[in-house]
Image (cartoon, protein in one colour):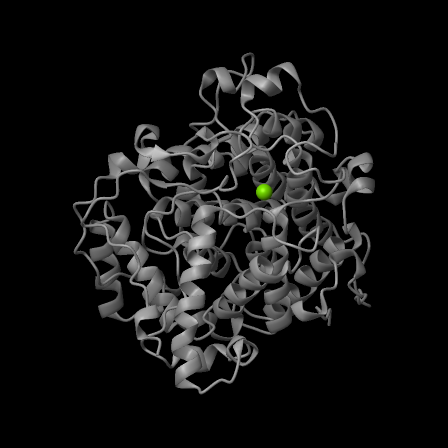
Length: 499
Ligand SMILES: [Mg+2]
């Protein structure tokens, strides 16, 4: 198995020893797509890094045409930012544990922030506001574990198993704020659907759980659920017309469980990004902003209008301006899965930092994902056109709870709590080993149904980091509501429990 050095070793990504997989057919089309998705993410990130935060007007006058260094972060051409670092943290967790381990995912994100784990420069030089806040919350909550298990130091706390963490009622792994509606979870998403590329329902469910660790707003969670489904479809050879079918969600609804997507995400599913191809996306309202609804729409606009060219789509995403690297990283995840590694421009691949590591990680995601599925239930059908139907296995009580949650779908907090609860209760529900027993999202929380959804979907009510000055902005990919409703509580800090 591919072994990742601990953060204390300070091994830079390009120096990590790679372990070849003996049984991968170089001509395997699905493997090429899995690698293409992960590499596509990193390529998009690196392509946009030099002009991150630049407004569209600047890029209209000075368009990016190829992989360039310098600019915003002063990186060498081909080096990438937080999008890729966090995606590699997530991928390394999936590979190391051969399962979805949210505690370990948060540990690795923390290592990236504190020690530069999987950073292209050796240290974390950029982090979104919501991500930073969730990691701080996570570190505070770890003090509960340290006391309970009498750990002597941070390393021992970090090494706790998921089982032992989940035994502690006062500890919740999900640290995302309910108002965090930035693109910081979507930018790192790909490893989840790539690992579960033969288990669509698991992929969609875990995409939501993964997002909620740092971004618990319903739009951010549902954007990740939807995009995971698209990546699954792309990896499994869906034609573009099927991926971008306005009825994609309805046709693949079994992948999504019982609770429907947020209305703004549904609007995007229904083709809101399909503008006049004879006019520019920006002039028709497409924005490369950090707000998740903008980001998802922009990436899909780029994919829809790219003329079947990864190069053209990635450049179009970057040249929308603002959160250039993340818009392109989101585009690259789907476009890379659709076009495959072999169709990413060679010139860009040659410049991509730690390319061999990213390819190797893609291979292992493919290999382990395939292997796990093959050992398990036929119900988790790998066909892109059919899915398992675990609903029949839900208890009547769970189904009723799910229906109740669906009826109160206008409450973002209800689903967020459901997902948090599910994350807490899940015992590796993501692994195929218990595929047949996991339930769809459920909810027992309906308290906050009066949340003003308009405020969540209106640019006028959000504070986009891209509106800050170019040089001061270090909180580029996340945003919070400028006016937090008093009935919309923040996560309770558990640091009070620390002795
Ligand atoms: Mg970035």
